Amino acid sequence: MQIKTPLTNTKILKLNEKTAEDGPSIMNIWQEHFQQLASPTLEENFDTEKLELVEIQNNIIESIEREKGQGIDLVNVKEVNKAIEKLKAGKAPDEDGILAEHYKHGMEEVDSVFNNIQNSPQRGFTEGVSSLCAAFLTSEAIEESGLGACIGDIQVPAPTFADDIALLANITADVQGILDIVQHHTSRDLVKINPTKSEAVLYNAKGSNISTLQFEDNDINITNETKHLGIKRNEQNRANISERIRTGRATASWSWVTCQKGILTHDRIQAMENIYSTKKHLRT
Image (cartoon, rainbow, N blue to C red; front, side):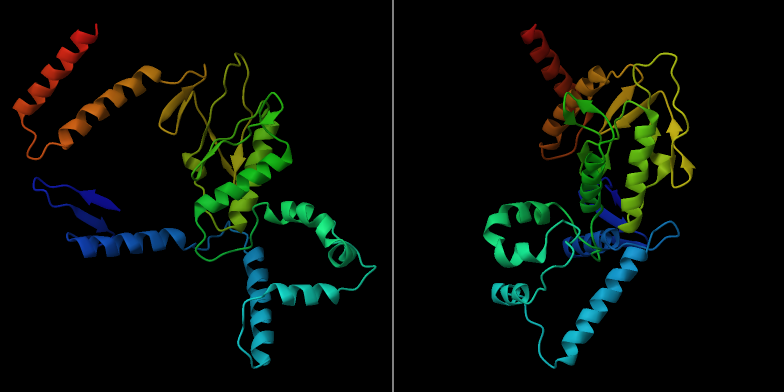
């Protein structure tokens, strides 16, 4: 996806070989772009077992319902209660440790516990699922593993912002364990992560070395500095604060300029510099 801004005020949006210059065409290209992003493509490293099982299950359910010759209606509370009454007692609990007797005789008592279990983020494969959703579920699995860094008794193994995950740990084994969890869940959710664009930095540990870290049989690049959320981090764990301040000032200045209607000329740039210098002099 590319946006070209020529000398005129017209903006051109390009997607592959398509070009749009007017509002409706640009909107259509954006729609196509996001549809492509949300449509998973099967790759060799993806674990399709989950997808195949879900498809088989859905096909069975659909065929059973269609054989009844009736329309498929949404499930209601009355139908759920009837199904619970037919559950057989004396059977093994489900994967959450809940027995049929819990459903039949103690639903009110275990309702809050049951909701806590069921309301934890979980889902099967969903066509068109976003990488953001997959990242959120993966981060929860990491926290449940007990691996990674802590601040006091608070786990902070994988700060997640949108679909960007940073892995934090005190030992290499934890990092590799977290990477394995990420690989497991993303491959089953058909989400592609490029290991060549991932980097590892060793903070505040002179003379220490990171053993090889791998993701999908690819080595993670060990570097002295990396960028996360636009902030550079180095081995001394120092952020590029001064550089970020300069960027912020420049952004604020150009934001003021772009609010002015017309063409940005050398005179306007010089006027901006004079105004900025005057304000700086008054502050000091």
